[in-house]
Image 1 (cartoon, rainbow, N blue to C red):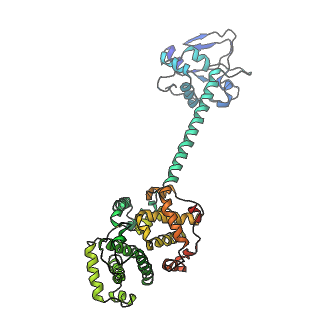
Image 2 (cartoon, rainbow, N blue to C red; image 1 turned 135 degrees about the vertical axis):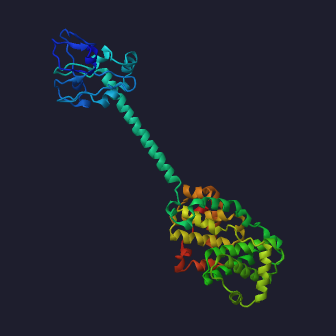
Amino acid sequence: MSGSDENRHGVIGPMNRQQGVLRGGKVIPTNGQTRRALSNINKNIIGAPVYPCAVNKRPFTENNGICNNKIPPVPVHRPVTRKFAAQLAENNPQIHKEETKKPDLISNEALDRIITDVEEGDFNEPMFVQHTEAMLEEIDRMEGIEMEDSNDIDVEVEESVMDIDSCDKNNPLAVVEYIDDIYCFYTKNECRSCVPPNYMENQHDINERMRGILIDWLIEVHYKFELMEETLYLTINLIDRFLAAHHHIARKKLQLVGVTAMLLACKYEEVSVPVVDDLILISDKAYTRTEILDMEKLMANTLQFNFCLPTPYVFMRRFLKAAQSDKKLELLSFFIIELCLVEYEMLQYTPSQLAASAIYTAQSTLKGFEDWSKTSEFHSGYTEETLLECSRKMVGLHHKAGIGKLTGVHRKYNTSKFGYAARIEPAGFLLL
């Protein structure tokens, strides 16, 4: 083995002043000069007491700046650790410069800084050690700040838009895989279920007040028959679409249009459909069986048998889920939107806007302040500003719900079955 190999792989034992320092395979006298061990210089990192120990002379490479050879074990206290040596080489530009010049052997200047003899006494840390520690602390501090910032961003995204379908992934009836496509289709096609907000101008024998009386009565009939909620919304949709398309409805036939629309809606939505005789009975036998069946044919042909259109109900269910509603919020929302079904002026709004505004109004009513989350905004497609106009009209309807003759909705929601939702004070602050 050559002298250079011994210097590269061997262990340099402790030396006294007379022995000198080993450099490049030669022993160079120290002329009485002494140096401190790195363990003594950097006590905070190494934590070793002042003690003569073996220091390994290891060449630095361009790839990692540490010795590629196995470090012989040190019997007493370990010298500079591998981790610190790597950090030292990485953060010390001088050492990188030295490595570029001599990839196999460390330079004499760098060796003077790293390989030292041991002598007791106090000595200030070299400048490169102070700089190294400062750089390492700054790197750790910046990494911590970046980690905190990334965590804050993740939390903000999770809080802004929640995954409202994650709890239904194992429920096949929730159709989580394509629920977004379904509601995208509803949104694009809801205009087909809308009618002109002034269609009553084309009717010569009926008016909007008569329409309100009919729908208020049908809400009570729907409640007594214990029909599904979807049936009520489809019934009213069929009435408006038929009246908008058929311009010659006599006043005495208006109630016939209402019971026939409910019959069609029941056939589409219900499992157990009320028989025609039940409809004759609730209309106080004002119409015969033949008249109801003839009106059924006329309505179905006028509407071209198109009964599968989005109503406010389908949007209510989705938006309530986005709002993470409880039973109280749900009942109040349906109370508010059913008040809108009676009012002719509310036909100017689309089904989705009515549903979103009803939930927004109900949330604000219960909480006492405006409340519309990012999740609700995302799934409904409506911002708080776009809902304010419709919401204010709903608050006005809430104020006068129990006043006048059209009180069917108020009586319905003033029962224990519907949580006495009609007794909740309206959100008057939205009108300011």
